[in-house]
Figure (cartoon, rainbow, N blue to C red):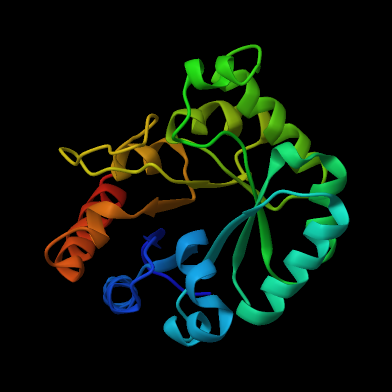
Length: 234
């Protein structure tokens, strides 16, 4: 896996032509590619594996969440068909489910999703979850890491607390990233690329600011340059 810019471009579409443009923009900017449920369910591995050029990091964002045996089989199937660098599961599936995913992942790194970036305190309360978003993220993160998950998916606002509680070497992949001035859409816990990396994010996930741009390649290059300048000034 090689990428000069620690960003996965989120390809969340069912349109293969649009997906090709997004993947080309990511590859040209030295970024990786994230394939989510929309495109995976619409087209399947046979159509998608050739979409991502060799050497471009692949993040398969399926967010598996089921009984351990089912997740074990789903992970084996996804890894065998797509050979992703990263694959997501939901930490809320419990310790046995996380362990089953890790045991069947081969060389693919399992990332556990804590609390979706589209959710806030009110959403958790409505679902019967006591405590703050930060409390829930910390509980799920500790559970997942204790069960062997290689890393975590979290909002940028939780980077600092997770690094402090779980160690600076904890791998964090952070969605909900928006360049300054970009619309937040349905994301409720966001941050700019520069601030997220400064806080300790290892990888960023950026979708609509690139894929929804009139020129995705130009948008990806601009974000890459923004990150390179930020890193040079750290």
